[in-house]
Image (cartoon, rainbow, N blue to C red; front, side):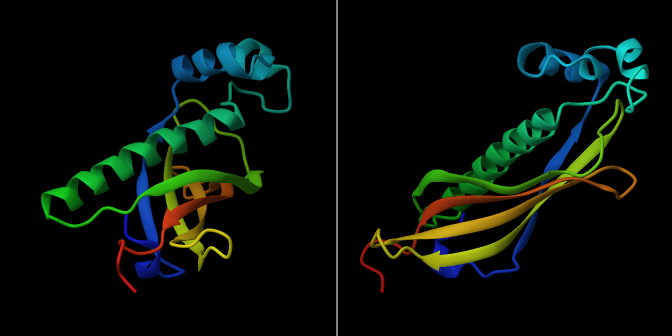
Length: 161
């Protein structure tokens, strides 16, 4: 991760891809979203989904897991190059969450991010606010999820202008 002063609105990154299987759809649903169309093909057949589909929360959680792994790999590469690593603050939330279309067994969702906001914090000197639009697209190129994630990031290295 770069310091926020070095990030430009419009920067994009491919975070990774996640394959939704019947097993991981049902496992997630049993724990967090036990609605019938997430639990069995038979129950889903009786709904407007017609087939077993992933919870929207599963699609968001898959992004989170990939995002953490992406940032970890990025940080390790920066350390290997001898670069300074900015501190990151807490997430400030999500907005504009949209589950655009169902995610079915066998779908492979590729997640990307695009910086939509990068500004200095008015209330926290040395820090800034970053907003990134996360999107997930299935193997057919169809968008399935979109949201904006907002968080805090160190503006510049200590002592820098």
